[in-house]
Length: 485
Image (cartoon, rainbow, N blue to C red; front, top):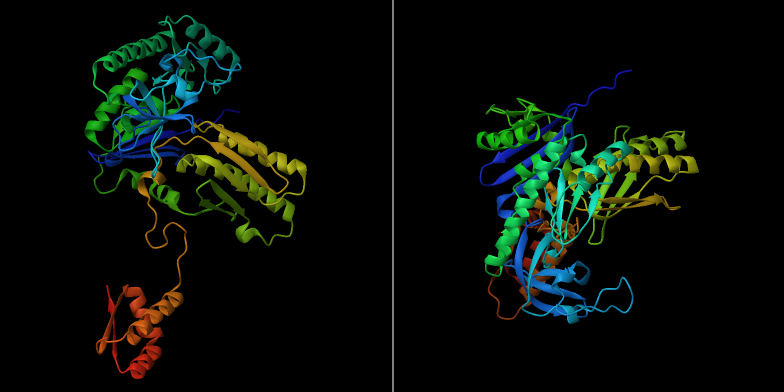
């Protein structure tokens, strides 16, 4: 029986000078979605020439001034030995030397941003640099020749290993073969590695000539990274809604797939957005919701905390079924696939705890565990999937990719301050009455009290607490004016 060919499409939507959105859909179902806003320019992957601002022995870390608002955080295990100011003599093999003995304040270093700054925390940086290309990642300072673990075919791994082994590199430089290299010709692979070698030569030259602090390498914007990192041979069409971007993407795509003419298409319908045309708008909007409905009627409830993300699996409207074992298994299997999908779409990183519906039989537990691992396989981010505990909990650790819609388009609610709840109007009204009671009794006050509050609470007081307000006016012989702000 012939295997049905997947219909994968890539979409690049651009608001010039403001925003870039990239989506990948398979058979009309959203698989990946990334957003980048110009005013929230990403620094992850950028390389800077910085200076050590101070060294903290208690944290075994250095703070690097690289030109950002907050200094970067460099741990001892991210310090390349070439920056050691004196020879390190660790007490036992594998242990890092005390950072205060090998780094000095004012010392210049080349660093790369690993994790974006968040809140009051500066960026997490490393001095182990890497330059990603289409098929390889160049690793200056690490003499390695590795192959992505996602290249699973033994024959292909052997072929790529031979090609990588024949690549001539300067001393102290290594390469990692990326998944996109699968099936590519030796010529295409050599072209990519030669580009990376020229790029590193330019970065190294800038590192010795520019002042400190300075940026010496910047990751390309999202539209260019989409072609480099996400455009694979199973993508049939690339749709772009901006003419200039479409031309640039088309040029890059032609370098990757020179024989595929017409791969990049321009969306010119000004009556409907590209997302509406391809029925993706509703799917994109759902990414911001707390709940996700499963095919059989169950649902996921996703909550974020400071330490982790909790995903609760509920049976929903199918909870009343007589065969509980079958219902629980079916809902958990659907949940496993959807959890993997939501982690990828929302770019949820760090520790994730999934609370599955309790399963009585061990074979059903094993099925759900296998389904989760299978669903997570297509995730580009590094991840580790644990087993379901006897309490029905599964732990997942996932690397955050850094271009999620959630991180760039949401903010803490000013009303609830991120808790998801607020004091109800009855409680707020009682606090307002406390304030009025105090103001009315204040010595020397005028014949009227003016109380400013939100329109919502003002209407509640005037409608639900009218009798109480009138009683206070009579008791103290003073007028009460509720004034909406």
